[in-house]
Length: 399
Image (cartoon, rainbow, N blue to C red):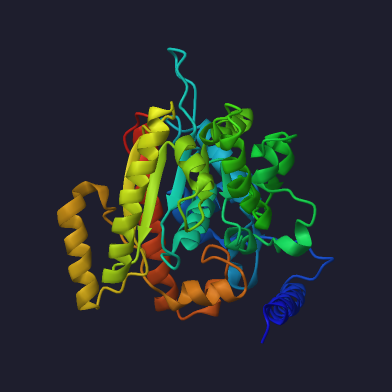
């Protein structure tokens, strides 16, 4: 088989796969339908807000706040927009600011909480990086933070989870590359897309992002004085006032895109699967990252972070070798390993078949124990990260 024939074969397979994926998407979400987030039971909303279900019923009976939809059996259901409206209502009467809207705020001394930019990274694919990024961004939005998710991976899995199929939805660009390219960049606001999650916007990704990896060596060789590692942070500054937290899903490689994201970051989350080969790969990743970011720091890049943590992903508590590896990591890295781990769960993988996260799917699609076990794990991880965000702003707990 000649090289030309292989090229044509690969191209044909790509076209057929793309067409089939588009058909699958249209079956799940028809072209004339807008993808929407499901409604939440009053019990789920009470858990999100940290109040009693009876209190929500009291608000409803008094005509205060959004009125829930009442279904069979008297169960009350709230839309995502209703949850945000409840947060705004409850915040007005809260004893402490930030109880229900935990995002950035200005202080009496003129100081303002700084934008939190969390880069989620790993050198090795399959570490749960995109799954972590998507669930983190969505949970923070549900918790009342104003969130911007950035897909920096040309494979665009983060985008797919939020309803974007790059070759169909972004044929003329619309990724972060358009805002950080060296020639004729567009404003950051032009590449931001609204999602069906209130409080969550995203910048989707596609193969255009690889152009930055090709452009940067050429610009550096021409000695134009362009600082590639400042381009992401400079663009984020344009929309900083609109968000509390930015979550960046980085590609599984340490290229110019990842280094630019790390330079813009205020926090770093490294996902790692607790297997020997994955940990060995992470060792090489850390060595390379340290060397390259040292060069960036010497060139004037800001490499100071509020926090850096390792997140154990796809964890199986009954697996002896995994437990040994987790213990090994904790002995080496101490408090830099998150206390909670993201469990491996069929609920998460099954939700991904329909391009959804666990926060989107209806729990009736799973056995109760499987769903609640996975959700408890994700909430614990994301709650711990929320605590770190609050601590970076000088607050105790999640307020």
